[in-house]
Length: 605
Ligand code: HGA
Image 1 (tube, helix red, strand yellow):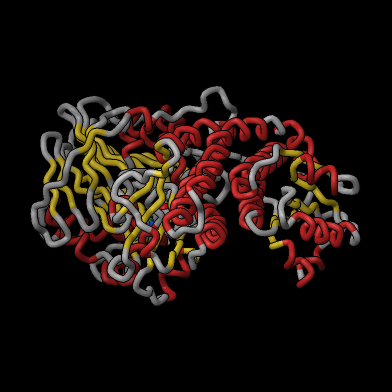
Image 2: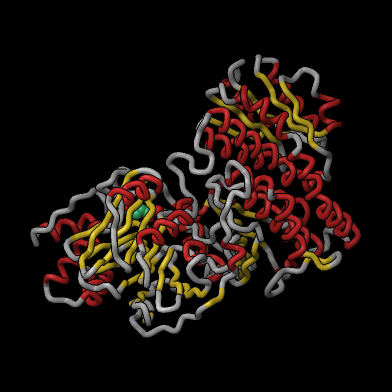
């Protein structure tokens, strides 16, 4: 969340900063701003709302200069407004910030004693004010930045720019990611390499606690102890940084449609003939006594699905929790535990903190991430890439199915390692998995049917999702998707739980989406569906041909998907859940790719 960019360039930086912010807009879009130093003079432009408002402002009030910083905001402290937008400036200092300064109130009180008062409601402005104070005491800009950083509690990625210093940025990372880009006679800093991709493919990732003094010709990085640090420069793949809608109306539509392709690619990365081969070090499940799965949001539902897989296929005890609860619960981690963390960005603050909690307690730290260079990947013993490619839509789609894919492969491997699955059975499941991309394409062809139903769902105030077994986490994910982008209140329940309370919600205005392939639990699901219909509820049944033939007659609507082996059903049923949310949002006219109040890469608590 919040996108940061900084450039010490050889050309006018304002348009380049705005372009870089466009690539970071998925991280926050409630306001944006840039600051530059031109002939030694520090100045800034800020606008509330989407980035386009800042570009419009710059047409009328251009900002010259070859050095500058920029920010796209997802507010934590203070409403989205021009005055709260970054960069925050206090006299000769401007800063952009991702994170939360937890002691900003104490610092503000102290600064008031020096006659410095804030003009915004943000925590961030305090950083600029503190640096101004140290400058006024005679510190150099670098000393002022360092003394300021020493005083900050909380999480931050920060970049400082100073009046009179057209060849200097000071950057710091504690809790939020930051990367430095190396150009030819230019230097860049950004929240991620994607922002910097058109400028350079040579990237140095800052480590936790690092501070960097950047000029056009040099970068000096010091670690948390103040020692000079030699951080490797890496070449990133420009392909991975390509961001366009490829003719689709929305990134979300493109990312839903990409799933068969990315899934097929991901499988190629993990399968060698009929063997599951993990990149990096081997993971032997025979010695694992317990698996702890931790994630947030959609990734949490991927973990919940994986719990069913690991328990049923590999007979392995599994604990699964949301990271924000796990990290503060202080759960005992017993010997023999593998802790596994799932995060699309690999930067999710709560998940990263949960990983660090397990660091010295678990036998092994495994992560399942989309960004190979992310903090979570780098702090894991084994980082498993999901190979989804860049996901821009704020509502996760292809990352979810690719997470499921890796988690299923791990569960299958565990089942074989632990003697609960024969090689023959594995080969059978893998060949079904290899055929799945084609089946997902067939499910995609249901898009028009789903669109027709979605137009009616769009009229609803509340929607319920029901599922049993592997379909329960899917029901949760379907409800989350709908909430995220259509703003319709949606809840999911395990079908069997309905009678314990939620059935009170049923009436003819509440559509009930039932996810129920014709599997071993189908009859139970149908009974629960009947209970809904007996109370006037209108059921949208998502099932396969056998399920539709058996139970599709009295329901309000049916969506028929191809039949797949039960174990693969979560990957398939994700498609109608995503399409239903997408088409409902379109029918409601909401902002599909940048839904209100949300942002991607959740780097704050
Ligand atoms: N606390 C700052 C930055 C917010 C942030 O990093 N969001 O992800 C603010 O509210 O402006």
